[in-house]
Amino acid sequence: MSWDVSIIKFSKTYTSLEEIPDDEKPIALGSQKSVHEAVSEYFPSTDWSDPSWGIFDSEFGSIEFNLGDDDPSSDMMLHARASNAVVPLILALCKGQDWLAVDCSTGEFLEFTEDPNAGIEGWRAYRDQMFKKQT
Image (cartoon, rainbow, N blue to C red; front, side, top):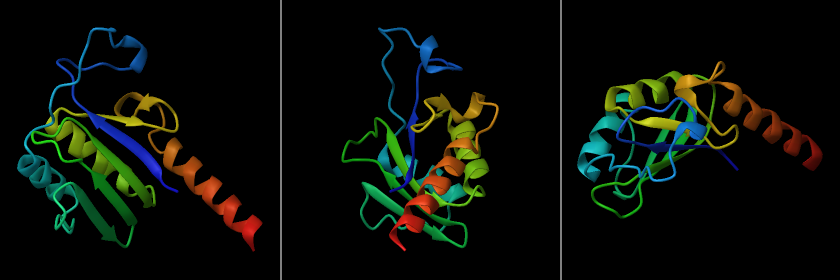
């Protein structure tokens, strides 16, 4: 169980999923090497021993960066188990690369939502509730 964020890039910046025309197709994020470098700039201890699956562990929690095997990388999925501290880093990463981050739990772009922490906070509340039921 994780908070999931999809990273994509389009030919222009959209502020909501509803704005994206039916004929719009995402463009590549970049080569795997350039994506690794970009991620590692904001998440410096990311382990890329598997080039398609980076793992970041820190005192804030963890994020798995799922790139898949495509090179160039068409998109990236983030599986986060962390505190709110990772949200500004995700936003900075995307801004620096002209990528967009879709919060899979809210269906909104993190960059254009009033509360970019809503998804991760909802995930933690659900996780905590599930752990209470098991104990």
